[in-house]
Length: 465
Ligand SMILES: Cc1ncc(COP(=O)(O)O)c(C=O)c1O
Ligand SMILES: N[C@@H](CCOP(=O)(O)O)C(=O)O
Image (cartoon, rainbow, N blue to C red; front, side, top):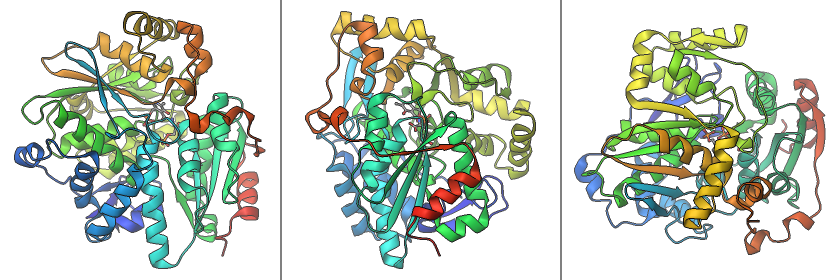
């Protein structure tokens, strides 16, 4: 399998190179040249198989030619052995035809662990085979950072630098990034918001001399491998609910558009998905875009679901590429518009193609609070605010005959203040994190300026040439 850039001006790469590259050299995102295909028979044959076995079948075509099959199996087994639930991503029934897919049973209690535990091992393996080192840089609105720190801590071939918006992540999220004692972990509090952090990461990738000097690599969902690993749970959930003989819809709490794009990829690979529903909080750029056909930045407000307080949804570029019939010129034009004026229009045909697969809705802060309260009062189930955004949008979504699976992307204990204020329950952290709030923090504070961040990284990275 080889990977091409959404902007059409970077060389195509094999899996291992795309994994280490993160962002393409033309500023675009890598996507597989073709979507691997799974027949109804292939999907039916997944019934009764473990998460690890389904992961192996789904991921093999993406890594073929680069990662040996037995190595892939070994890395998958090691990655998911870190999860505290035997099913890895269990389903919970919440209504007659409604289910919640719990993606928070990994070490840092968010869905990011699903991909991060695997890609840390994949990167380590590739770097070891090449006898190389890398400097990994990531931007986080809260969860990616903690998951990356856990997955990469102590790995000898990588330094990991995480940029988080100062004061805009929950205390639990911050400590998951700042209390690691591993020497290769570096947390940076940036004086700005998540979009500033993400812009800095992209700017560093586009600064070729710096990129080459520190051997930059990325772990945000701009890295194809993140999306790839997340495709798996759309298959496991659908198969356990009767796919391919039953169509399933998914509602996904959305920020950077990575998680829901993984659902779109699963559909392109043959999984019968009815609708993909984008759920946003009050930072509703994606819901507005689907309604109006205009992607327009308007500023970010802080909500109780901080991980989704995002305006630049990086992976929307991957969808645009497909919706424009893989015309990289159209993507370049849209991205230039976004850079120059903070907006772009989506042409009628592309918008029609997007609306054919996706619906979208937004949840207000009041609705999020109410749904957490109601869910706990009526069923005893306590959900986090990101999951609540999606449950609210799913409840309002048009319901074709299909079952609705809502993705639960974080454990409520990551956001105790919001949960307590909504339903009165103070969700406890699990045993392995119970002393998190007493651990000593270690992080640096920097302004959102590229030269200051680059200078800092040059001073700490061991991969510098
Ligand atoms: C808990 C949680 N839910 C939802 C999202 C949104 O996911 P995505 O950025 O893949 O759209 C994030 C951040 O990515 C998150 O941390
Ligand atoms: N919500 C994310 C933002 C970064 O998204 P990513 O999926 O591109 O890493 C976070 O929690 O950091």
